[in-house]
Image (cartoon, rainbow, N blue to C red; front, side):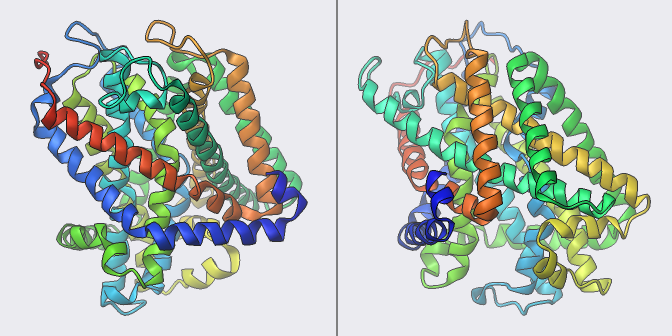
Length: 486
């Protein structure tokens, strides 16, 4: 952040060079590592460990399944599907990779674009979250390990050993998440400022500052109110609005086209999933995997370790199989439905309605696409305002939960009995994220923040691969614990 203040141009050049080096040299590792996580999630569902209860056979959940699911969705999605759900497919539609065999701007390119959205926003990214989260849940509740990312490596590290390693891992992942949350907040600020400009015609740096202060203030207040108040209430409201908004667009948008595209793209995604998963290995010289798939995996990975602490904490009292259903399968299906509706609608607008979203994307930015979509729907003004509120709420709920986890690993004495960190630590982290995001958006732009967050993706990838190997050891090379009764 200080570097960006002193010399913005030099900062962006250095960050871009490091980011490009990581993605060029380690794209193959991103592909192989995330494929390992995806396959491991499938194995867990059918392994005897799936019957094990998190917290022990007498553990009782403190969240209902609906509350649990709503918090998981709102914690992991943030502003991602709102910001990119309508913008990203337009990029892929008009500039598909050369190895896709599709011509830009055609129906085939549209189906390919939607299949890529399924790749980037469903089962693989949620596997990235689920692997460290389930290992932390078992370590924290069943193995009685500390509230630290080092605990996820419990198959290799004896209890109480290598404290320096835990401090190092936590510190690196805290940096990655601050940058990742700043990038996400930057996308949220752009989405909200784009909506305010679209609806009210207002645009200025003061508006950006006001949006930042409002979002940060809201998620800090929610975080200090505790898990069972702020996060639970906000996520419940948020998920209901998500569902209603998606249903409205599905009913009043190009329903038939959306259904056909979704079906064809799903078949394409399933047919080519192995190729999609290994795209950086199969096409190492092609710039598209680096620009999109590896770039996306780096962003998801930067969030995953700290977010895993929070997701693991929620799972007390449920079985491992229930954990995988709520944290992997259901969010992936939700993402698939969301992308089918939102991405499918804008693809139809570009292909069949004669609306040049590609030019809009180039001239006004990605945040403009979703508001142009609303102009094709009834009650466009009301829907735009609802969407604006949803964008605000979605970041607040995600930041709320991650601030809770960040405060936890910055504190001592966190245990299942006293799971929440001191309020002042949450406030400090909230203010830090807000300051980093506003300064970077104002001076370096959202691309600078995104690249900064990506730099945390490689160390997070190495950590989660190690966690995944530890999981394999638990599944196949250790004496299996007696399955608790579900």
